Length: 403
Image (cartoon, rainbow, N blue to C red; front, side, top):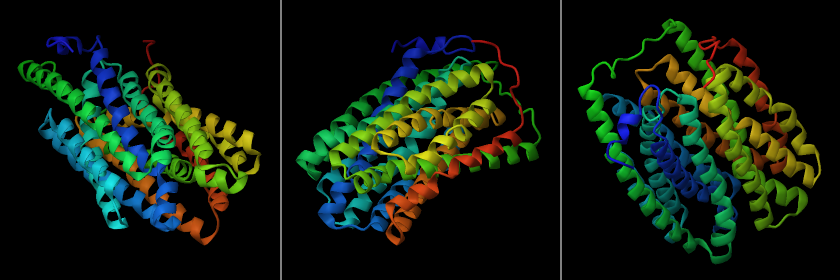
């Protein structure tokens, strides 16, 4: 990135190289994180974990991410720290090296906690970077950022199948190389971010904040609705990400590697679908994108537990394409209502995403132990029906100019 590139991140110009860099850093970050659920079958077999213990591992990781993210976002709003992104990635590096050598549940929980702390710093601050670099195309910017994360999440199970499953737990340590690359990129982004903050401090007009057009009560109601929608999406995603491989192995007797490839297909479809939500929200309104993304996935989720192997994998791809576009639209919709608290809102919603994903994983792990892995898929398929409440959101952008 050139030193003067921050001048192009204005209302009418988008700093694409910055967005691509932060999106690639998101890819590396989420790729490393997605290795955790991808190696659950290996850890379960090696240590004799129950499904409930698998759920606790995810819960610790997700809570470490979710509880700290709103705090990190609020601090970023008050006093941005350009190099905190690189510092947070050092926690992820330490967590990867720890889990590669872990010999007990306690060490595994410590490792995922460290990785969760790195995530809690990364997401709110990097969302601020994406908005600053957006040039006004906030939906597009958030989609570029999110598609990087979803692509990384999709790569984790694939790399686990190719590297970790054949060579064992110690092979997780090789992912530390990705953490080192991410640290290098984030230091460069930190240089750009620092220059952008200096430019904004010298230009008070550019730093003028928009004022919300809605009453506080309307904003609170809308945020509650968005929170319920995030719950419906990420409780369902938790069942897919953490237990889809077990479901395929149980119902169709698929191998571990075969089930990992099927999970990769779902996550890859999610990565592809992520990019659609932001640009479409910029054009037609974010409310409508949220509505179609969550409620529109319901017919396919309702069918998934009752069809054959090929149809199951095909439906998972369709579900991934549809449901993945919601989060970018939800996040930008929320920050549009509170434009002076971008970091805090990003932290809250990323925190909800991780926290609800962790609770969903623990809940479905407990339920699978009590019933069966097939039963949890019959229950989780009902969650996208909650997308119907999107109709109660206010229309804050009923007309959009074509970008």
